[in-house]
Image 1: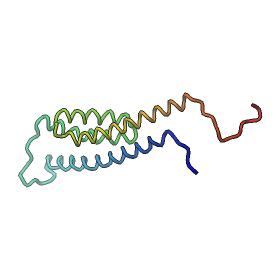
Image 2: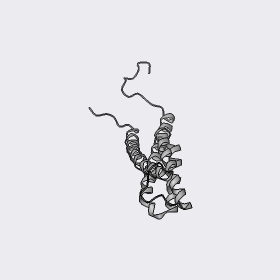
Image 3: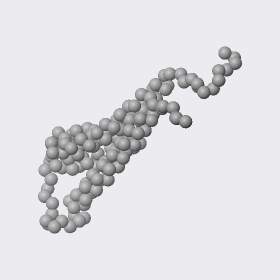
Image 4: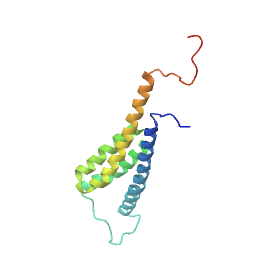
Length: 144
């Protein structure tokens, strides 16, 4: 027996892909950020005797990473809010540093997936609220 097509099935699949990607991004970039941050504030020893100070552009990129991670955490509960945090930051970093195009495009793509899930889910809800649903499985009533 096949299950009937549900318009929410593609949304669920897309949401799973976006969440899996966000877990990888949070894990990878979180590890890189916190290890670099720990070295900068002196929690770990560095063999070179210390880190060089960050330039203004490097500091803006460096401190944008935790905001991106927070945005992905928000995306799990509120897809629109999380996307509105992560997507502009990823575009901002791409503008600042052309060398970060590939990693930031992965972040931007994941953010766009969350945005698509939000939009698709919202359009399904609007469609369900505007069209009267009929139950085709029950026999017609004898009153009609």
